[in-house]
Image 1 (cartoon, rainbow over the protein chains, first blue to last red):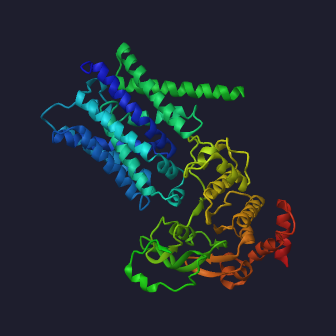
Image 2 (tube, chains in turn brown, orange):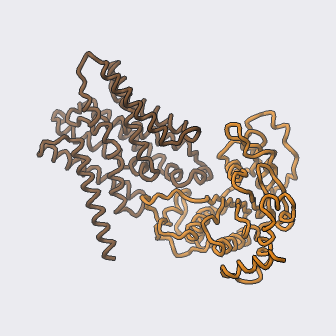
Image 3 (cartoon, each protein chain N blue to C red):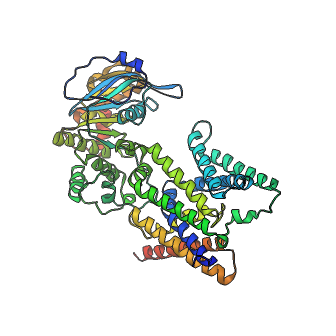
Length: 265
Length: 272
């Protein structure tokens, strides 16, 4: 069954859907959209370096995503605002990554595969890395759910309840790094943020409490992956962008429905 | 007593002897807090006893928030110590929540976030805080006053021995703040828990306090509300206009105000 590239693509996409839904909710709640984007861009440097030393791009991307996230949280508020630092690091990491790739003369590297993902080329070992990453992140979020959530609402409140917001922030950073690394092969560095944010934003329309929003985001993600992959097969369009397009369609539909419902009341 | 943080062993020498009664909940001892070299608090010492209402007032940047963070253990002092009664249960009422509009959460769910408590207990706490009927509402639908009371109710869960309120009336109008403080006073009477309030809102804060500490990087003066307001240090910090605030205090228990009456009382008293 795993020998079929379409089956592997579906499984990879569903893994990504499950990991991006809960994390995406935190990204939306904490207004970290740009943060996710920047982390993903920075991961490109990790991809380039991994290709240079011929190791799996997953680990390079993971390390640089975490370095980037850690750097900005550490340095922000001193001399520059967070978004300034994010802009500096993410785009320079991306640029340096692209320059390094151009020096790699050995094999022709298909950059597009990393910028926009190449879900149809996911191998069995990629698949195991993706699902391992997914399980680690899901476990982390379930384990730290309450402190993560309290820290999101108010850091002092979290302290007073006996948690350490700085540590929770670190957990979130690591989770984001893993998610970025896992997503690179599926949707690519430029579309990762879309998979984080669009399902979460769609889910807001139907959720009355945070857990329900996470579940709904997961459902929207899975639908986007399944329908997106099917449509890309039928219409012969690039799979990564098609998945994001389906997610967007869900976002618009759910917003229309909730607006209509509100107008009726 | 548990010594929460002591970075420099040398500062042990500075530990003063204070009246070591069982009733002291928090003891701050020559507390000094600095952020990358800039001193926010210097040599601050005071105690909070059981059942006491202590109000800390100070202008912006006077170190109020640093002091509060040091007490809940969110920052480590450079010098001095924060000692809290071992096992002291603190209920914390934050200034505000980072409630993004995309975050759906009902009042009931919010109440049950930090502790495992039953619906009944939540209901009781909400009643104590003066908002009985809003369990099912979404947090984002609450008014400023309701939100503040929900935060208070959450802090009351698990029967704390001390409540810490950080600028709890920010965003409330004057009558709203007065109502809120009345609620706090009632709470102290009912539960006997100590209350530490931090505020720059001078007009109503004084009313229920046993003790006011006037902070500006260090303790400028402290004592009963009346005594503090009479000191030149206080008047220098907040201006002579503060007479009016105290007048309001004295009259608060005698009659009910709506907002206009409060203003007029304030003015006539200030004019005297």
